[in-house]
Length: 195
Image (cartoon, rainbow, N blue to C red; front, side, top):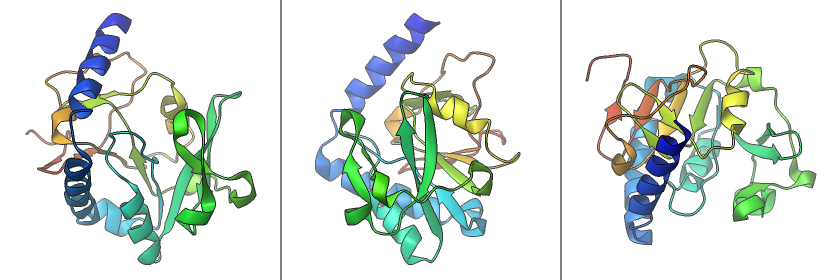
């Protein structure tokens, strides 16, 4: 299982790394439009985003648009020693972030505005690959798997990925949690409904 996951992770990341900056910006814009069209987004007051790095879907414009819309945007502050994340409110991207581990932007200590995970109405989750059933292959750190348990029951999990990250099948363990919706530049996949 570990080997399968590792191979799939490597394959999908290498495909994603072929995208140019222009591809990423254009596709991310379409993904943002699809996200903002969702009922679960419109109903949500407090939204936690993953903060993108490398060739991931660029979440910065979405975070900034969410703030402009008067909603509460949160970002994770990792605590690697405890292998956990603290949701922190973002008010101003340029002033609230510093480069963290692996150069992933994270909230500065002095800009930390912690929120309780059970106050989150919608969680935007990262991942390397997803299948049509909503199964998720993460990066292997387990941060999000542990974080899911802290959310109030029924909090929607929405994945934002490029269409090339949707694969026929993701190897899963019994504790893996599926996402409720997968948003790509081409489609919105609802794993709860037959595709």
